[in-house]
Amino acid sequence: MSTATQEPAARWEQVQERAAAIRRETARVIVGQDEIVEQLLTSLLCKGHCLLVGVPGLAKTLLVSTLGRILGLKFQRIQFTPDLMPSDIVGTEILQTADDGSREFKFAPGPIFANLILADEINRTPPKTQAALLEAMQEKQVTVNGVTRRLDEPFTVFATQNPIEHEGTYPLPEAQLDRFFFELRIGYPTMAEEEQIVLRTTGRGMPEAQPLLDAAGVMDLQDATHDIPLPESVVKAILKLVHSTRPDSEHATADVKNYVSFGAGPRASQCLARAVKALALLRGQPTASIDEVRTLALPILRHRVIPNYNATGEGVTTDSIVAKLAAGL
Image (cartoon, rainbow, N blue to C red; front, side, top):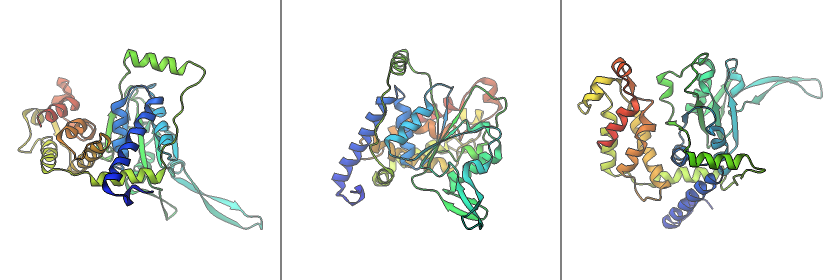
């Protein structure tokens, strides 16, 4: 039964059970990365797309494919390369011959027609192909030869980017980065976590995640986030935080005026408001709080705040600026 048709108390209890079960099942396969898992689930509940930045070998692909399996979603991985064309993503029309000898064009859908997409190393493909993916992310549809086809819901893209290699890459412009709900930085595991990884992956078998939901169940969870209250104090904290990233704002700090060229736009406020509600739901809290705002400030703002030459020259990072602003809430 859809949770939307249940009594509020029963619906809340079932939503909490589902969220807890997803996290437990993920932990059976993924060692550590609890914060990243929480933020990926937050993004998914908000119907947002994520950019995951991390060096190779940190289980980014395994993490996304595991989530897809647990949630019962159709998963597709697209390896981005310099020769990848837009048609390789969205699909193309192919001329086919029928048994009676007649010919007609039939649409062959690309890998974008899935629920959960892993766009691996998105910065390795030219801007034209990047734009094809980003259009599908924004519009939830693709157009081939004048025919528009809607993508199935839920639809989420998790794109990865390697921060080490820059030769032969095509960095995403700031306007395209703004389309990503979160930018997540995946770090190295601790020694204890890496010991578990070694033991799990060098034996005869590895644990496999079991499906717990399906596409309808995921959409039920997405719908449940709308019922989480957003107190006025939290809204004011969100607006203060976002406005304080803008150098010409009355809320801007001395660091922002010295080190920031452009602050975050209104989309950041919208994303942060949705994200704190989803995170409160995942944590079993009946209402969003300023704690969620502080937790999600970095993934929401780090790719939307543009540092200037002063920051580059003095080694001041966007993360340090945003973290200081969030701590002051």
